Amino acid sequence: MTKYIVHGGKPLFGEVEISGAKNAAVAIIPAAILVDGVCRIENIPQISDVTAILKILEQLGASIRSINRHTVEIDSRHIHTTRTSYELSRKLRASYYLIGALLGRFGRAEVAMPGGCNFGGVRPIDQHVKGFSALGAGVTTEGGYINAIVESGRLTGANIYLDVVSVGATMNIMMAAVLADGTTTIENAAKEPHIVDLANFLISCGAQIEGHGSSTIRIKGVSSLRGTEYAIMADRIEAGTFLVAAGITGGELLLKNCPFTELESVIAKLESMGLAIEQRPEGVLARYQGVLRGADVKTRPYPGFPTDMQAQIMALMCLAEGSSMVEESIFENRFMHVLELVRMGADIKISGHTAMVRGVSRLTGAPVMASDLRASASLVLAGLAARGTPHVQRIYHLDRGYERIENKLNAVGA
Ligand code: EPZ
Image 1: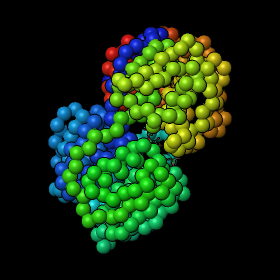
Image 2 (image 1 turned 180 degrees about the vertical axis):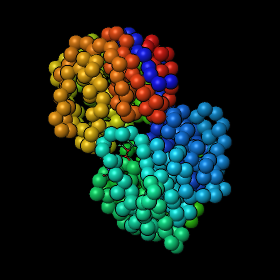
Image 3 (image 1 turned 180 degrees about the horizontal axis):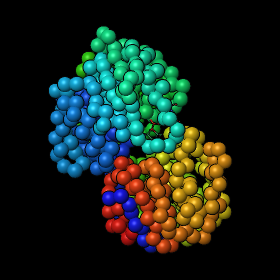
Image 4 (image 1 turned 90 degrees about the horizontal axis):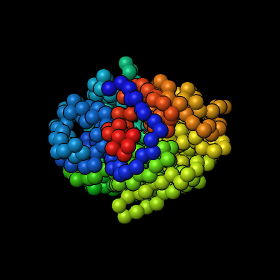
């Protein structure tokens, strides 16, 4: 399926089930490589990034038993190589987690340079490499592969200070350190909820980790990890996307299995724009209340406003009264959705890392091109509110991070 045809202008009403968190799943699944036993992982989102990472584990020799659509059992005891297939791992940003997991378990890893969303410029992994080197590995790149090897076969605990608050580097170094000889400290660590989820998964396997969710994480290396059963947390970014969908279509949605505290910054911003959002026993209820007001947003590391919600809330701002200012402080170029929103009639000007949005009375359908995961979500949201029928092309980006989003939207009246 290459494009969506969105018939906009209809308020959405009903219930949406939030799936497991993409950015937790694409780290916890590779982390099973570290475990000397069977890991039963539940609440896995059915998205293409997860399918890809499971395929890579299988290609390495792990056995994957699919129990149902959202549950797999992974047994990594028979992995026979530490070199990933170029084809499979080059497309995926999260393939860099395979380096930390393979290096931590086997003392070596050869993984194709990561791919993934084409925003934010080069998307370096220098902080990941800094961590692996501090733990005793030699890291080189050749022929499109990153090769990390520790001669002794086992990493040694170290104190690592991240120059950049990096989610990926924090999780990758944590994975490498759990089986290292000695204690590792990660200073200036990222605090995202899915980092806590990964730590909790590893702890359930017998890892000794503390401080996860704070800026200083301490990991005491153990000799091996045992099998476990673990359910992945709900996806706060998918949830945030549906909160915006309720507001932008003038409807009301009840989100089941929806995180609340992890969405504090997003909920506060959406309430300031005029949405009513409340926690009910059966889920989180989001309701349009007749007006949308502009607001200012600056993306920040957790618990600040998440960069992964920037494109989505900008779509809402396009139809809000007054103007809004969006500053993207995490990635150097995450405004790929702006030009496409302008094609639909939005009034947005960019200067450097800041976009100035002036609300318009309506958006109109137009053929638009998705460029990355959250930009695609932003275009679908704008399409749901637009007059006329926009076509959103290259929607394979959406399938990377949203489980059957078209079914979920159609089920509530889209
Ligand atoms: C993760 O990307 C997520 N990807 C992204 O989710 C998310 O946008 C991002 O975290 C921020 O929350 C996965 O989990 C697979 P970072 P990551 O390392 O790890 C710079 C989505 O939409 N940096 O926290 O790449 C980097 O360039 C996707 O779900 C370095 O300079 O993000 C950026 O400016 C997109 N050196 C900043 O740090 C490094 O070694 C934050 O990047 C690593 C990162």
